[in-house]
Image (cartoon, rainbow, N blue to C red; front, side, top):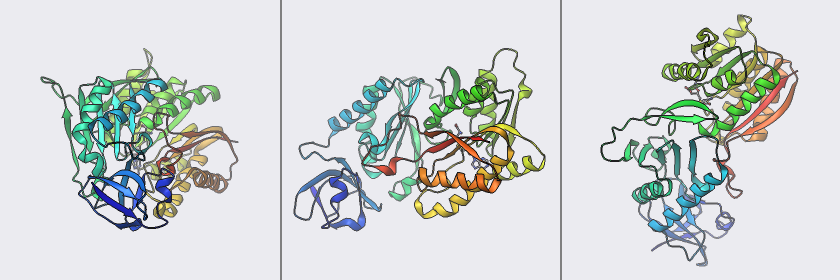
Length: 400
Ligand code: SAH
């Protein structure tokens, strides 16, 4: 077993069960990509069993802080079972759910979502890559699913020195390999494409916020809704479910919009007039400005942009971009209207996001009442020892 020796004073984060060790904190030792190493303090004390990643600045990711634990196939089976058991207890109101959420489930560099009978996984670090076969077996055993698609095509793989790959990892003999899977969310029927969809297929972290949006639209009686950065239209379906009269879905991806329109039609009551749903294939920022110029107004707006800041280093530019779209949204809202606004940038924490949105309100000359703080659904947990895991934050604000 290879040993990684930590510089004196740099063992503190591991002692607090923070699972990462950066290259600069290592005094000595190296290993192959994904190899299991014993991490020791400068005086030889055991700190963790971990995966070594020679290419990444996050040089070590801890598997276990228990000296007696063996990192083998049985270890991954136990961790996967624990993650799946937690989801069972959460009783998620959907057959699409996050089963493994990386560090928060004790499996750094691994994301697994379930879409009905199909699993979709991302192996994002050298350690999870090395144990891929054992993890795949454990996932099928713990869930009873027989289909597992790999979506290891995220750019972070490059930081680990890993190529981007995607395709079926497991599939029963004779299975045609259809990648579009029908799922049910809050009683709505949605399609997810595990091969072409974003991330592992779609944005499950927003599931509970989509239901909350439907609730707020109903409570506040919002008639005209704008869903900006709509992707496949989950919030648009929610808006109609909440009683909206007209919904505009805005995104810069034509395939996403086509699916959004199909989702709205499929989940609408009989006799639904399709003219009540409009799709706009355009840049959101420019479109918000145009809608203001045209004198359009909305009773509710969703702003769910892609990550503007991957890390704190880009926070300042991202802050300006968030402020800009939120200011425009405040202007487009009727007094009494609802803003559902999000940031999924890890580099912008909830307090900063709150400040940015408050600043946008000031610039737009409106007061806002904070109705609710929003976060990722509980099947995307964060552990207390790993604040970096917290990324999605949102605010439900009433324009006064
Ligand atoms: N709210 C969605 C998820 C949004 S993901 C849901 O609940 O499923 C962010 C979306 O923003 C993606 O669909 C992406 O195509 C879109 N997007 C990215 N840049 C954009 C831009 N400049 N203008 C409009 N849409 C954009």
